Length: 303
Image 1: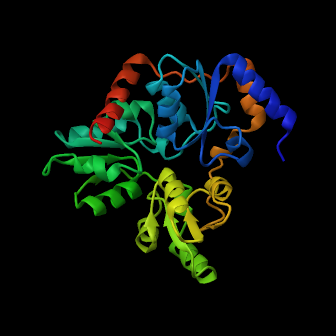
Image 2 (image 1 turned 90 degrees about the horizontal axis):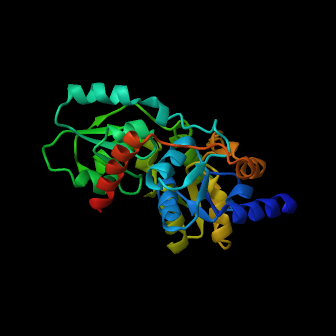
Image 3 (image 1 turned 60 degrees about the vertical axis):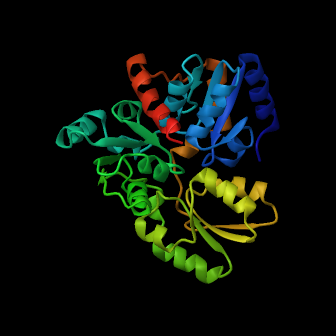
């Protein structure tokens, strides 16, 4: 049970700092419950850009705070725990992407938003797990496509678009824990449940799911579905939100060990310390920020 006194102090300090608290769907339940905005990484940054807040407290991982800094250059962006990184985002560097581009001159580079600012800056367009198909379909037929860093989202997108793509060998260490055996076991126990999985899952998991959605897509889908039971194939943190917003429905984790420890590093205590000390600031150098912003804007322009 969250400490009410602690929450009260956070809310008081948030008001004094003119701050907004952004919380990703995979965060701890008590952190989700203090969010001004709860959602996926890019959507949260866009919401923050619409506000008159001077300070953004981003409860997520480092690339998400970087994205907020890219989109909201006039605001101070704080990451409560500076060690909350994303292993997949670190699986490719800007130097590695540049080398790949030299091997494939003329290729369009599509970069999943789950990547560092440096990698975004070397890309032509960003994409999200919700719009990767749309972004790839916008590229003229016949043009070579490099997709980084997630090979599983890339493979899913290639299947949906029929486009051949050069895929980087990156992946989410949390989503790969979900196996076809996990899905089959859950189905045996809950035969009436719909299986909804994230496209970062292994290809063999995506192939046997009933529905494939981003986190924001999952939230929307289950609220609109007539089904009453759902097996959820993504990081288990989202179950708190799904259960809270859909009290008449049942949600089962496809794999209880699909836990991102980096996502769980941000606690209420750290949120409070972050607001008290105005730490830890995340700033993207302007030359990187401008180029990364172009890749994000190019994605938006294709929608």
